[in-house]
Image (cartoon, rainbow over all chains, first blue to last red; front, side, top):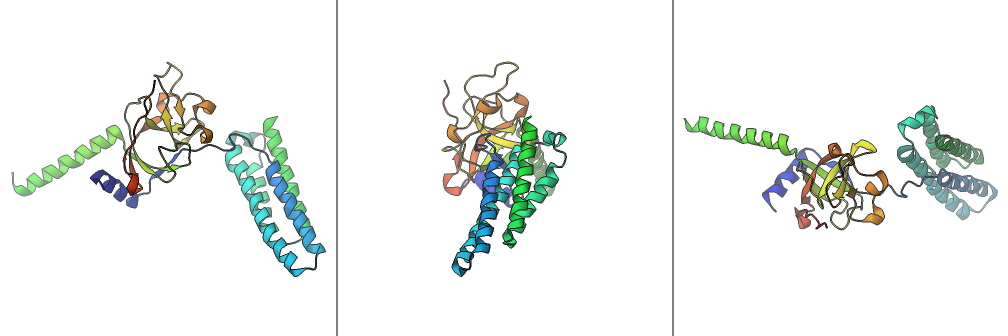
Length: 138
Length: 134
């Protein structure tokens, strides 16, 4: 190992290096709130199937898969919030940050319950996000 | 000069030299995030960036023209910049790169320096080479 490499590695122990971004903002500028909504639809539909079933194994699977789908709702909302929306969009959608706060919180709540009403609230919030998204395009 | 003051002068001169070099070439350590510079840079590689004059074909750190708080690592395109237009910065892996094809040429003031040395991981340490440009 060269002296330079040793010194730099030592420096990293004192202070972590900054990040150098070498990536694609995949999917290359393509953003669509439908992605979150489709997962939210799954969450609600799984809740309904859970309620309609009395098969323990099926219900266990339903809970597991609902957790995964709810996590995907969060993920897709976060992508919109952190990557698509820009500070200037707040002029058109002043409650944007609060909306994402409520929507991602609701996705968390949907993990904890099998009440389809919560699934519906999550869908409604996804629709609000879609409306905010549309407002930035107008 | 006593040996002690001699040593002190040496240390002081050394510190001054390091400080001066630090101001002139402003070394930065960057950890690579993403795959747009494959195969030259892999995610997780750590590189040393020095403020050297821009040269075609070299890997540069450039402030993101869309978000100046964020540094991008890209390769300078061929040729010298058109006056008033800026530099073309491109990823080596065009299929997975957001670069001048999308955000256009970048002004010289956004260039932060050249990535000259990979210091981690240990097995791939060494200089980061410029690619030949037409």
